[in-house]
Amino acid sequence: MQIVRNFLKSTKDYPLLTALAAGLYPVFFYYTNNFTLVNTWKHFGYFCLMFVLVPVVLIFVAYRISGWSFLKKFQKYVLPFLNMFVFLFLMKVSLYAGLQKKMTLAILIVAALFAFFLYKHYKKAVVFQLLLAAIGFVTFSATVISQLNFSSEWMKQPDDIASVQFKKKPNVYFIQPDGYMNFSKIGKGYYEIDNTVFEQFLLDHNFTNYADFRSNYGSTLSSNSSAFMMKHHFYNRGTSFSEGLNARNVIISNNTVLDAFNNNGYKTYFVSEKPYLLLNRPKIGFDEANFSYDDIPYISSGLKLSRDVQENLDEYISEPGSEPRFFFIEIFNPGHISNNKLKSGGVEVEKELWKDSLVRANGKLTKMVNLIKEKDPNALILIMADHGGFVGLENATQAYHKTEDPDLIDSMFGAQLSIHWPNGERPSYEDKLKSNVNVFRILFAYLSDNQKYLQHLQDNSSYMIIYKGAPKGIYQYFDDNGNHTFNKH
Image (cartoon, rainbow, N blue to C red):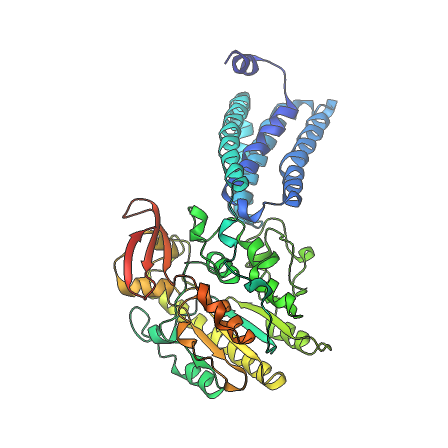
């Protein structure tokens, strides 16, 4: 405490400490709240540069320049202004990716007013920022420790499915429309949408639509990491159903599905409308991807950049080569309702927005199916959503709240599954296609013509993290037989 008192009473300026204080808490705050997006050494270097080194150099140089004789009278305002501006600006960056011109202007004004009226008290702001940084370091350390203690036990397979040998090697297209509600549920409950035109389109193109199919988890990352590993992870005992530890690395870098395709000589492609799955820059385990890391900012939601997957897919299909191919194609319609309760228009408005997005999804899927059927008529085409659309909720964060409403539960987990089997050869065990976690295991049993891989199917239960309306924890909302439950896992 004496050190703090001496600092506050001192007439000396401390430009380096003032600069350091402005950047430390924002970097700890961003890392703690977005760790799964930035858990690479490249990100660490970027944040050290942009949040610490650049502010230090900027503030130190500006302070030195302000000491020149003709600027000396303004020097007392420089450190207070730059400290407050840098601190608030970096906090804004930590909360909202992008520039936000109006918000930046407001921060500029606040920093100027602080410097003009409260410049004598700026050291108190520096002390406060350093205290925040100390608290931030503790929470950041806890986050890092939880990452280091991340267990990969759940990813181990009970059999040799990673080295499965296919007897049939059609090109396989896994198309994932985000948040697409199952046909069997979309006409009732909170949806009440007539989607029979697109449903019939798929039937006319020899697809099989699987009624009452559901996801096991409530988000793209949690659902896909489970699907690609063909195992349950139970949210890694985490607290966010949307951001599982290492989920992007599991999906993009290394998983059992990619191992199986690679071992059977497949060339693999990741084709996505947006680089959402690439935000933390995982090593890309696919042979080809339609995004490079040169395209992706270090601070981004991954939802603003966009690619025409139809165009990219056409290029990839047309590439010469005799090897079989696996495509993971991700589109972001219809998606789910707003995550932000402040931006949500309410249940009915969000429903109408989802319906509009469904129309766009159907248009994209129709073009994609037509393209694939034209150029690759004997392909295995898998259209599988990652979760439902959450229609009926005011905003998606309400999924964390306990509900016993079966229609809301269906809305969160109901997911569309449609499969075009090559030459119409549907497996006799297709009735086992009930949830995402088992789909690839069943497909590999089909491609290998070996039903031994069905001996280790996972439980088809569905899970959600709940922190309101019940003791915080992971709860089972569907059991293996598709019955609604509410049991703490």
